[in-house]
Image (cartoon, rainbow, N blue to C red; front, side):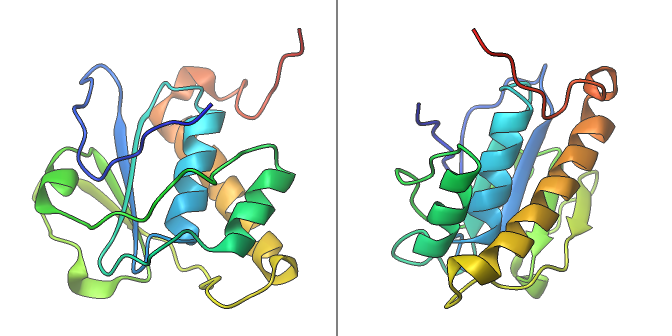
Length: 156
């Protein structure tokens, strides 16, 4: 199942909205967006974008996420827009510096994470795992009642 994470989307104000931003929107922000979408089970609106989007998602990031059972092959890097920032409750930057527009009243977090660009899947796995931990913490902050269910799966 593919989810659309366009840089601008209509947001359901009943849900918190999170925008992940990195330079190329090809690795860190794509993995973070995929984890948040997956682990929040759609209870959080998820967007991702880059200040200088790449042509494609990093193949090592795609492979690392596939190992987690999350398919991001259909995702494409998107350009960061002021509208995407305005539409988000939380903006998480990952190495894009001052290129993200600032709007009062938004929650901004800067996650210092190694850039997976040019690295093989072996080097991307620890970055992926750190992102997962941060996503789990973010979910507990945005959906406190869901804290006990984050990351659990149900088999039919």
